[in-house]
Image (cartoon, rainbow, N blue to C red; front, side, top):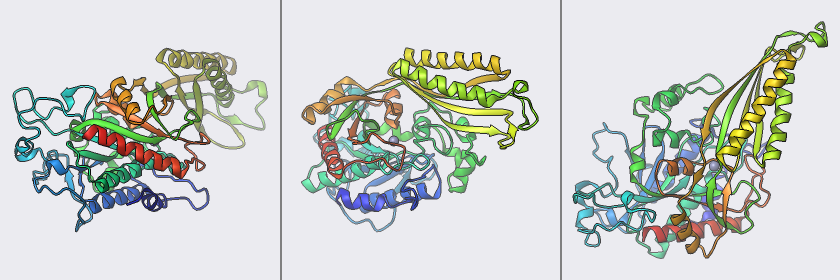
Length: 468
Ligand SMILES: [Zn+2]
């Protein structure tokens, strides 16, 4: 199916008729509808869809490992060919495609071979089809994909472009008659933006084991609904949440994503690194009082401390060549005629390296504390999530640049599941599609159709190279 027709259907799901934006928080009706669309597209292609306990999905195309030996697209009779990645369903289908029954061992092109497959160019250990003792290992594949959730009133491209491009690239390779030597997986990972439960890359963090299940399940949304409850409401057993068996099958991960700044002038680029970044909660506490009768000099107003801190953050980030944003605020008691008692503000800070990020946070905190002393208020800074720098492996990156005839290489200030998987040891790369305005996390986010098509072509070429 063409990219254009896939995009037309997917991008209509949950679009706000007033703003043109999307609010697809994890496990909300619009996000579930998008996920349902993804499952149906995978079923149409007869891909083998696997889910882990949290709901991260990978749909496998694995003609070489399929015992039926079917090479190409067949219509699927049902709306989902789902094998749960968590044990206990008794189906016996939780293993990797082609791994059960020693299927891989009967393939003459791999039998007896200890050479790493080309699925993991940065080291054979993750992609070896055989363990050192000659035992068949899980067949690891080349996984691409992204996420279908969005920020609040976000744009159409951040996330879905990578999922739609992945399906279109698989269609393209099949139409060419290409037969991958290792499985190719199309992934959709849950709650990447953290717009509902406040934790960015929630799905990949839980999958990689860097966010423990108990901590994840205790997260709450703005209505006080816990992730545990949201999963139960969705018909998912929270007991299955934990490190994902899908990760062991990812020999390589390549995420295509819309570029979120103006740094890319060619249609397609390749990522070098993801800036270190963090979310920090600033709690400013003062004294609630009457807006009409309290003399200005008698007030302990935390809003003033916050306001000064927001200005300081902006200035310090400019001085450091970094980014600092207060984009979320909560005020108590939140009355027009009352001096507030508490202002809670969330700082998003990012910089090119860890030292700059740390000194930026220290400078902002120092100015907040100084101002609090003058205002007779207090400030407490709590890190909510901090992600270290991710340098994508140079070997894989250079190989992809070669496949793409010298595509430009650039860093990004945006976090991605690719960063989490890379930190977890999966050889990972990212492709960016040009964003002419640099606007993202907004309904105005945009990419030209020609650039999106160039992205599909580039992704198909990369998958072909990694899975040949
Ligand atoms: Zn994204």
